[in-house]
Image 1 (cartoon, rainbow, N blue to C red):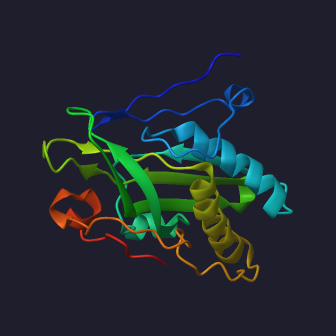
Image 2 (cartoon, rainbow, N blue to C red):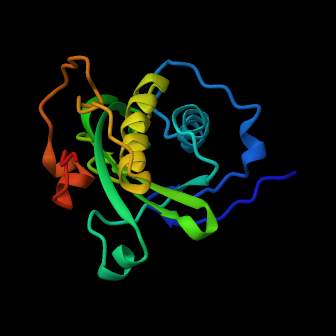
Image 3 (cartoon, rainbow, N blue to C red):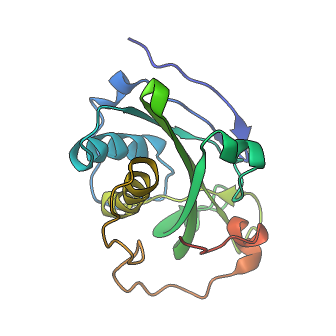
Length: 202
């Protein structure tokens, strides 16, 4: 079965929705790259969800690079909830190929459970950073598998609490729990800072 692909161009990136069958042959290492890899997030969410939650609801994981940090009245009425996490990753400039790490990468999630349909949806938006040398387009980050799992563990904790009424486990540590030293954060080059939501974790 071929993958079903939907395109929404934002910056230089595309919204891509993968069919679950396309994930079976994908393998990711714990090496941190600089490429934005949506399938790494989708694949890990599917695996972790099956281990962490004892429910038969089917959850989908999608990407939208224009969702906002505040929900409208209509979105709240329809059951959408929101959470924002901070993570450590790396960027590569598409113009000059310079790379840089950051411990202040903002990741935004919208999620909801449609109880009547026994289906849930997560929509993710990673915020980018621009190259200091080129000051051009916002680049999207790459992450290690370990960092992806830390973020998703916190997200799943929010879903368990807000959608199923379960007690949230103590995962209140920063997604980058190990001390990481990076250069001072430059808000003018940060997409999340420009929108006023940088590092606002739940």
